[in-house]
Image (cartoon, rainbow, N blue to C red; front, side, top):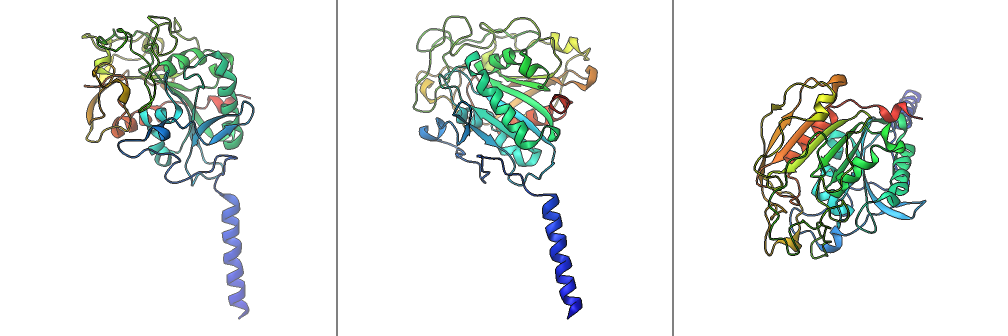
Length: 359
């Protein structure tokens, strides 16, 4: 009898010890759910869901955002942190499903913050809010547990990434930038044919399904500006990996440039074409407000697709420089699952550690 009591007690102590060593992380004010909160279905995501600005409150500005992370995340487990910025005229939950890396948060151990601009266009007045989100995630996860930190931005969110990555707050923290039709470091492609837009040839900002769409100025990088229009000029002086993704219909007939000044900065080899990525499943999101008349360069209905992948091998310090071109796609069709996962793998193949080294 005594032996049985001792055995039961030992098992209980072992279980308690295991739980004490590896409890699941619970981020304050951001409960984790499966499936993730406000996740869209495969098609026909409702307007009220798309425009939702997230359940997590940034306590200093009282603005909300989305925070997705593995529900089984263990204390001390290394993760990759991603700050994902929507385009002009758009919303955080639209961005979450335009580039749906939340579907890969468990497999690749990702912590993804997706904020919202109340004016639907990013400017320097939003910087404090973005800083506070980064500081909050670092505090909750632990600086030593963030093995890499990436900025992701679609369209004007990409232009904003290009601006903020040069600022004092971000320049020594960010390990990589993924530009989703948001400007290419080292040489932009020419513009595709956006003729036929309802109000001129400059593409407007993506609207939520059933929502409004902001018209872009002719040039200047403001609300709804196209990649490269009014963008921050020159190459950044800080070091980070860079991946550019775009739709083939967004570009002119010349397509993506074969060379990259950013690749040259790191003494990368000549551009190399990798295997195409084929998707048999469509993305979640598109711009419903711009389908009559349809403008292929702006974006049509979601559909399966194929993407060309180009990398610049052998970059100094292991940096990743790559271009991905989605064939028969425009500016606003949401990314398909396989090309999304390919981009995640490229991000994770790059060196990290900047946040761990900053104080």
